[in-house]
Length: 237
Image (cartoon, rainbow, N blue to C red; front, side):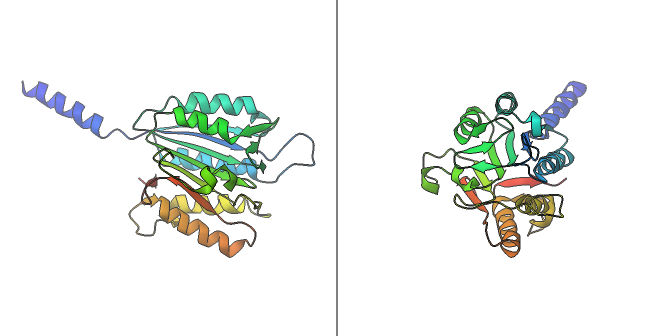
């Protein structure tokens, strides 16, 4: 009997301590068809975000698509299969770095509309849903004229590199674009203001906003959605 009780206790403890899984899709494009529209570091932005997510969690599913592999159909299929695999105790993350126009991110062979991303993410059962975007006019992805309301799904957060009328900057001589550089710094712990090894939404926003304002005159970070200001975005082991 004692062995049975001990087995049940260990099984219960294992279930209760299982780490929530992170399901992420990271997309970055520097090499577009031809030469005219090429960027410098956006593909590395996606690689850097992918590495950060993998390094910080043993329970992760992270898909990386860069340059010619980041076609519209590939991105759509990847976010569909990845995000719909997440359960109600999991978190999903979509990261994009590359060209943007109002209403869409620019993939290798066409436009990835905001609505297609949001539709797929809306079908996911994940407990939290986060979009990080480093692209021109990224703030345009906000709905309801930029104001969250009661119809905005709960625990959905967008953190965007620029307002809807602004362009986002690369950072020549650096391995990442400006917004992504500060985003990565913040998530790695620089934004952890109370030093509890958890980076929350408000901590990340305050850190990136301050760093970006000090290093750019033409873009401003935007955080939007329906979420608690202390929603954890990164927990450090």
